[in-house]
Length: 351
Ligand SMILES: *Cc1c(COP(=O)(O)O)cnc(C)c1O
Image (cartoon, rainbow, N blue to C red):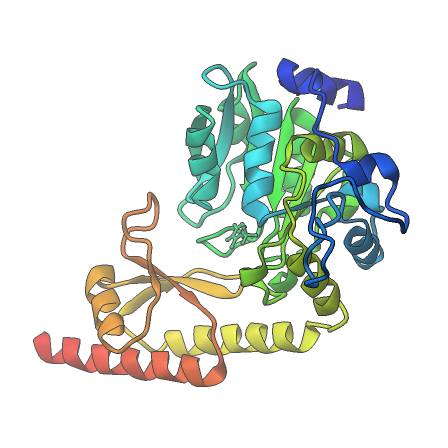
């Protein structure tokens, strides 16, 4: 696809949109006497509106990610970027998107809110991606395909070659949600945004970066798409404290924590193999492990009684009797293993 083809995908009202222009935007942001935005002149530390373009933060993120600031959209969590894909490209009640199943729940929620139909393509029994089914589910009104790699809740990653194949054969937007990419052995698709104007890569500060409370999500794409998303977002979508704290956070490397979590994930998988209540352990490239157990509701209740909260996915299509377990601190994982052992002993007595 070419950039002109992307333009044809955009909702007509968005193509014609004249976005809200903030006072600081028109002025250019040099130092001065600010009598333009009806702010309080008294310094509280927070009396000025934040930078609506997040210039400083984007300039800091760009070299880390190997992109230009024009390739970056910052959102109030990835959730804002997901919602904006619908608001920019999908005509309510007319267009549709295609998503894999099971996957992250927000794609469908955002679709429902925007009155856009979602076509679910079931993953294989081992959660592999059936590319032909995915493309067959698309029609002339399919504006976007949502992929998630590593996928939540299954934990597996999609090979990059598979995504390239989809990007080349689908004439619409391909969103690849890389929320868990830092834990993954498959490299990020970020460098491919130059080659594919229809690719949007999502990342977040919420997982490996350890900043879920900040609410900062990132979308990477070619400048044309980033401009559209920036035009539709609320002008001050990233508040001043988030911008400042994100800049601080970026000074600190996360390699140690990520390596520790991956090591703990491997340790948990090895330990899980010894439990007969765990019937199947799905290979994970993320900071969680999906397991199929003898009775998900019973084990979930047992863990809750021990003060351990995991995610019961048994009602999710393709996840019958599956629990999704986040990798915690070593001592938290120890508690989990201990509780699993007690459950196992109890169920032996029952039998
Ligand atoms: C946790 C998660 C996110 C993060 O969303 P934020 O809004 O950035 O916190 C995004 N995608 C997936 C698949 C996730 O599991």
